[in-house]
Length: 172
Image 1 (cartoon, one colour):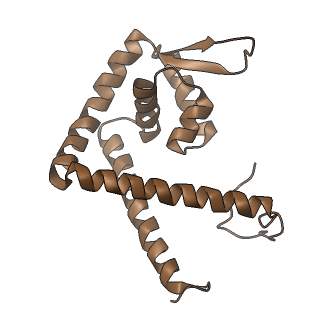
Image 2 (image 1 turned 30 degrees about the vertical axis):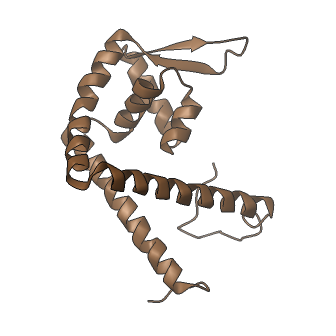
């Protein structure tokens, strides 16, 4: 089946790229599941461990995961005593999150198998190809983000009738 746009060869490449990214994401989720942890927890712990004190919004932006998912993970980590909240300045709504000492230990134990896996992947592929891939994916993400903003500014998203479209994103 051919592409539906002006450039079917580009659509085919983007579909293949999307499938590859989805495969990697699925493999990471499977790895997390086999290690007895939700992948969202791995992502949040990783950000907290290496970025330090951050907001839920920042975690969501770093990982590109829904705010509600981050909120659910944060709630559980708080109940387990792995994180604590801090407020700076007068804005009590924007809580900064950081790992407790117990959380640091939990993050180290939880992320250690992930780091071993990454080490083996890096040894197999090499650091330079991974750096190039990261750079290229960041460039692609930046381009998609820019074009999305342009479409939003041009009103193209609002002008589309997406009722009944199973592929449309939820806005609520």
